[in-house]
Amino acid sequence: MDTYDTILKRRSIRKFTKKPIPRPLIDKMLNAARLSPTGMNMQPLKFYAIIDSNLLDKIFPYTKYAGYMPNGECSPSIEEGPTAIVLILNDLSIRKSDDTAAGAAAMSMILTAQNEGVSSCWMMAIDKNNICNICDIDQKKLSLHSLISFGYPAMTSRAEPMNYNMGVKYYFDEEGTLCVPKRHFEDVCKII
Ligand SMILES: Cc1cc2nc3c(=O)[nH]c(=O)nc-3n(C[C@H](O)[C@H](O)[C@H](O)COP(=O)(O)O)c2cc1C
Image (cartoon, rainbow, N blue to C red; front, side):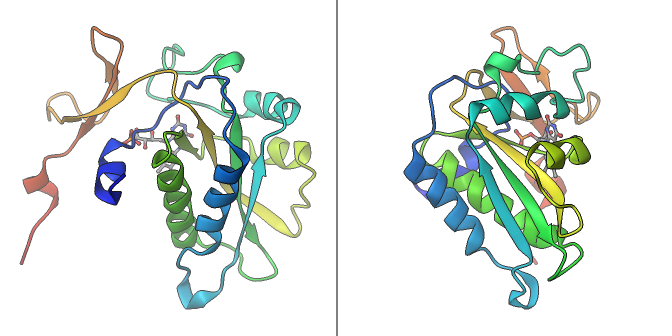
């Protein structure tokens, strides 16, 4: 798929089917992250993919989906949870933190997956301590920046022009599609 089409098609998806992600695609996502830009080419990040279903189930309670819908409407049940999670980790021996590098790597993985029909939700509302313990990560050496949940979609979502009276909160339409309000082009973009 054309890169621009892939970018437009991407929405955060929070409910997934059980269909496993092919292993070659997991490798491609990680490789895309590895080759992403970093300030001064420091490459301070590590990327750990979790595909073991027992580990995924253990991590699940420590992830919080769709904070704008506190009644859980948009949150997966454990059966609808991701079939892969990638942890984005700062290697403390290289650099304490690098949000921009993490952002670039995250989008590389998300778009590589999206291009092959695999959806995602980038997540920071996570219990880092418990997740590191579950994954046997030595937090003196590696600090968890964020994680990305991946899987084939079991829900639909689309971008909508923002109604400024309504604000930024996403909502469901009558058909059950998640609508994500986006600010209008002319309010956000300028060519000078
Ligand atoms: C840095 C970052 C952290 C996020 N953390 C969470 C999270 O913890 N839980 C969640 O459900 N969504 C999370 N999201 C997804 C956002 O809610 C989502 O990107 C936003 O609502 C816009 O929707 P869209 O991705 O479909 O365009 C996060 C997104 C980003 C970029």
